[in-house]
Image (cartoon, rainbow, N blue to C red; front, side):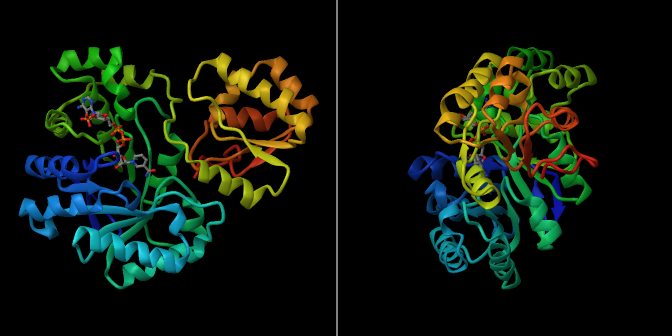
Length: 375
Ligand SMILES: NC(=O)c1ccc[n+]([C@@H]2O[C@H](COP(=O)([O-])OP(=O)(O)OC[C@H]3O[C@@H](n4cnc5c(N)ncnc54)[C@H](OP(=O)(O)O)[C@@H]3O)[C@@H](O)[C@H]2O)c1
């Protein structure tokens, strides 16, 4: 299998995600994947399965040097001593003396990124992890202010989500994007357009979705598959060939479905940057324009009278759905909008907002003079 070269490691482009698998079922699934030819396993202390992954690796008989193992430190262990303890515990649980990639899973509200990354860099210097990286946040600061040797950014990416800005930035730094939820948590399997493309090639919709990701430069993907049949189908995606018409159809699918929206990222942005008087308001999970509009009206009508002065939208795309009447209510309520979320956003919407903001807004996102503002 092809690998991506990054910060001295070779990252196999297809890995096995292991979130929501534990115990004997997890061990069996990882053993099955390793037997099929997967050489990249993604886990985290938060998944509670590092020992099962370790047991599967030991049982596989595959030489350690032929495997790539990623694990992550959870957001409640980000003080330097806590990272050290979490890292030691991760290695103990797996029975390994080194991991290939150690990531900061999600940020905490008070993340001291320089301290976090210098701890990770020390683990790398000691040879206990071969590379380090982040998942979903603070990428620009990690690279441009701290100059950390970031080997990847692990973020949500699939056929239903636009990650153009993030990819543009990562490619400019030669850093791979590891796509988590590459099958949109199973939703790609139910999409009729993908199924039609699949029929043409004798493949499933999920395989089509995965190959679309893997055809792009600098992307690795870590689909979770507990069933051996799914693991095999995903592995076989590598041999599928999509044509230009297939890519056009996939490009036309809606690209605003975000499934993982870490609350700690929003809190970190709010507490770190906005001070008091604000409130985190998560957009509705369903993505009808009416729901987004109702959500914004609720903020104006019910929360503003309670003293809310600004609010935080993690999905910039939601703004497209606000009606004129809603913008008027928000403006009359004196509200300021804060954009946050490490990689949410849509270039065109941001440009429009900056050209004539319907209300005052600020945040880490700026309409891009260069298109690298998102990370
Ligand atoms: N860094 C982060 O914050 C973060 C966040 C989320 C996830 N992750 C990582 O990314 C991995 C993948 O994300 P995910 O598990 O949330 O979602 P996913 O990989 O997009 O989807 C997993 C779902 O798709 C199903 N599936 C897999 N292959 C299939 C196929 N060929 N046909 C039909 N259905 C198929 C699986 O079913 P079966 O299992 O029944 O086969 C499972 O229900 C995680 O396991 C985790 O390692 C990281």
